[in-house]
Every structure is written in structure tokens, then in C-alpha cells.
Image (cartoon, rainbow, N blue to C red; front, side, top):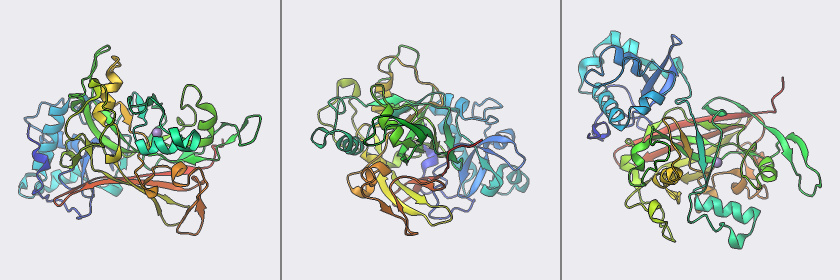
Length: 426
Ligand code: MN
């Protein structure tokens, strides 16, 4: 099926600012509460939210095989499970209906009132019910920085890293979407120089600038997904802030890896941008040496040129950008991650989420965490209000953004904003 939704020459009868992340070529998917407090699946063009459930009821998807209630759900899981052919048909149809040249809905005021919402009339919800969440560790720069800080600068990468897309199983119950505040976690730490662990609020709460991909039903128990087919099972991507408590993490992670220092919260952006919409921005991944084992070998372009940034907004203050990086720096691509994840026969389901791992670039201002940006707190960052940050303070808001851009079109992810509140008190 052609990706007619991606036609760069198409314009919409809805107003779209030229710097918008959501031109008619994007057509992401999300879940929102309407002004009548009805939950629905929707998309967005410019600053207009579009109720796909209402469009379906009014017949705008006639001819596409969809169940009656496919968009009247509180998550995208069933729609995602319908597979790539359906995602493409729906995106193509939305593009047609909102095309400047198409008068059908444009000139139907009554239908527009039912289908279209201003952003301030809606409330974004979690777009998927995340069944399982896996986090990789696929940025060579990040793994090298962390290895150099905590182990040995001469042997920063562990011997497996260049052969295996390293990952761990996270926890999905604490994944939240944008504008949901989180609390500073408490836990057990071993302070520098101490001989006994202490219990209390984490002193080193950090963000991790990541992206995550959302899968469809991919395989049965026992069945590996070949690397050459893996992208067919990827629905789309979101911005992902994988909150981390570095002091808890440091004390607990041996020998089984991340646990309570990680699973207190992770934040995802609410609009899932499809892999289809990102097609024009494919680029080659960094050259892999040594050559991976055959089941991980990919040919062609499997990474995406997505500009990423993170900023910190102190309470009542202005935002300071602290990091600019790019998804294309990832050493292991998504196809390799998914092929590796299933090579032992582990089943992957609709709505599963796979984090990239912190995305650090080659320069000091492109590191994707405060741990690296401030080099373990030894080089604090200056905020616009004159204060300094080694890690994240109570009441700070961390903002993440991501977008792709070429001469024709800009496709973005909007914002992911999360405020860190003090320790939870009843
Ligand atoms: Mn992570």
C-alpha cells in the first residue's frame, strides 16, 4: 500500500503553523478525553485534535475493514494489533479527508463540530496499555561515558557490548504520559565513604533522554522475528524520559541490574508517531565493528534522523536547554533490538514498549542524562535563573522534544513535560 499520507505537497484545510510538529504528513495516534469527557482514539493536525471514533461513526472510514468500536477504546492496543495494512489505510484516509482540496468534511460544519477539538478542550491520556516494557542500552557514547565514570576509562565498554544489544526488563506499571507529575523516590543507598547503607530520599534523581518504540503482536512463543522483518512489527515511536535515581541504582544493581532506582517512573509522550511518517528521515546507523553475528546483520538505512533535546524549568522560572542530541547516534537499531529480543522465542505483544536507552551523542552538550552532562555532579550546569544543577531538584520540570526536518516537511513528537515533586507524603 502506498504511503499517500506522506505526500509532501499536500496541505490541509486546517491551519498548521509552519513550525508545527504536526503537519498533515504526520498523523500520529493518541488517546484523549473529549470536552464531553468521552475517551476516544484520535489524531492531530496542527493544533486541532481529531476524534477518529466520531469520524468512523460518521462514515469517513467507509471501505476500510474496521470493527465498529476500534476507535472507541481507552488504548490503541487493538488498533495496533490490526497490523500495518490497517494503520496505513487509516493514515491515508485521514490525509485525504483533511486535504485542502477535499470539501466533504471541510464544508460540513455540523460534522466538524463533532470531530474537531481545540487542544485546550481535550486531555491527553496514555496512548497504549503497555503490557511489557524493555529498556535497551544502545548508545555507544552513553555506555562508554557510564563505563568510564563507574569502572575504568581504558575498558569503558564491557566485552559483550559490541556483540549484544544489552537490555533489561523494566516495569510498565509506572509508565505515565506527559504532564503527570512524579515523586522523588526514597530508597536504600550507600553514601560515599559510609560503611552501612542508609534509607531516605534519593539525592541524585536524573532524567534519561530516550525514545521508545511500540510494537504490534509479533510472534508466538518460541518463534524468533528475523531482523529483516522486524520493522513490520513496529507501530511507531514516542519520546521517553526514563527517570533514574542514580544513588539507589549504584547500590542495588549488582549483580542483577536495574531495579528500584529505575521503576519508580518513566514518562512517554502522548502522540505515537508512526514509523511510516518517519520514512523520509531514514539514515544509516553508525558503522558496526566488529560485524555483528548474522542474526543481527542489517543492510540499508535502519536509523532515523530525529533531533532531540531536553530542558529544565525551575519552579516559576524559564527553561534552560541542557542537551541536544539525535536518535541517529544509536549504535544498535530498532530492527536489531527486536530481532535480538525475540531470537530466544520471547513473544512480543501489541502495545509493548522498547526503550532505546539514554541517547548520548559525541559532544559534551549532547549527553542524554545529567549524570553525563555534569560528569557525576563534578561540573554543575548553570540555569538561566542563576542557580546550578547537578541533578534534578524538587519542583523542576523536565521537558523533552523531538523532530525531524527536511526541505519539505517537519515531523515531530510535540513535548513531554514532567514535574518532579518532593517525596510522597500521605
Ligand atoms: Mn533507560
